[in-house]
Image (cartoon, rainbow, N blue to C red; front, side, top):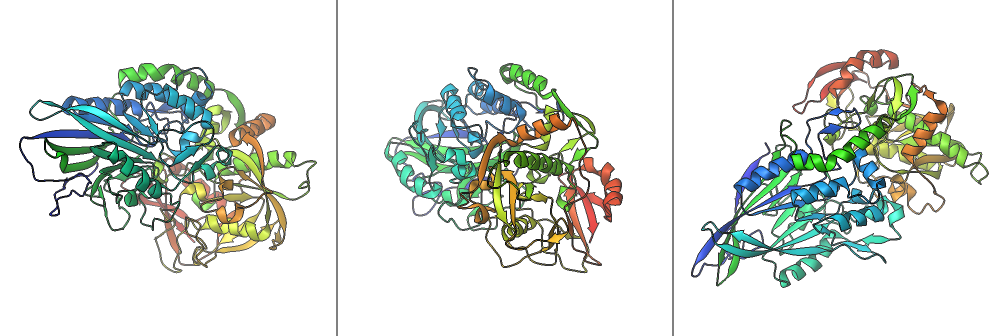
Length: 635
């Protein structure tokens, strides 16, 4: 269970910190208990099944959340059920559903049955294009909200909705409560997928909120809840900032926040950002109740509000409590959801069984963060093969082709089982999704030697600066996601961990630098050397960590196919693939120094062989409270 706390919302100046006025009561005053239930970042985890390993799993699902919601509704007569975005993409079930025209999307079918009142739109809900999202919105019996999104020519999604709900007082009398719900998504959404840029624009979250929330109040909302597909960041709220849930809570007129996007649990036991106004134990942002209920159905957010109503002053809020309730692995799937999703689930399993090739070795990502990752190597082999063919007859033919890819499944917030692990032998489509999880498109980028070094410096910022001669230092920065850790094939380099990183996770330069001995075919790479880099459409977004390199690159070539399709065709042509076992990079030696990193317990049987094969001195030294295995690496 997550942490829960009760917030007293009385203030001496006659207003509540949650935004509703707290005035002296006059005449008859009645009390209403409103329970707000919230999900976020479901990522098509509709059933407790691991499609990549083709086995049941017990890490949460929408079907199990549905059973939990029914329990809450049986205890609390006045409830709202809300979702905070990223529900259309994330598993092979979502990939198949995006191609099934004419049928109700299985996520929408399940959410309709569960009786959702509203949902915000998340950035990944655009992963299959605007048409798929708009079709889903037409099928939904609840509004999909996006206040800071403007769609050109096709009509906007609603910015907000005011629900008129009949609530029952503690005395049993019905009253009408007008609840305003407003949705926000990251302003970077259109930049992350260039195919969206011509069709829509995303505005700043906070500026939009300051404009829209007064309109919601003016239209008669008694209560305003913000569905913010945005994380909780300690950084300043600069224009266009991605994670501003805490700053959003400070906007006048907002009473409660549902946050998301970063897959964290709030309130919870994990450390929270150190910033004014963030109370991870009390579950408040700027004094207002808030939840961020994990991802993939891992948790259900619960905000309990105690509201008072009298004829003279209307509604006022006196008390609130926020919690995130973990979804028990033993919780059954709601039968109605199982019936609605079952046919799509079975079709997906059948499709994933399609054979596409074979591998001579096991493909796993357990040791990706120390340079040993057959999964990333395979992606790079396929990308380079495709780009070299595609450049024939162009002005770029003849330039050396490199390829960059990052591990998508390497633990982190995904947990100790969030790793690629494919056995040697036959490969099926399900294994391909395990290896490459996102529907990115392949691209080619002309790049200089100086830019290549900058690319690698950005990736190497994943690691902490290590003090020579000290044992057991943590290797990686937990705030740096592994999907930003690009490995480039066909070049070699070393990373000097004694030096500070050159960039922060957001791409801000620090003046440091740790890439050493960068070579191509044994020759040192000069700043003016020219290459073509095979990469993906997400890297060409022009914002974030790699934005300083790709911004304004009109010479970038979007070659079109999804990267997964490229890998599939590569495997079909090769039939049986053997993956180069030589790592592209190494850590520079630091005698007398060791670091500790996390991996999944499934990687422990491979530890001795990996250490011997690649000349690494490593040992298993324990386990974290969240189930990760701890490995000591001697530098």
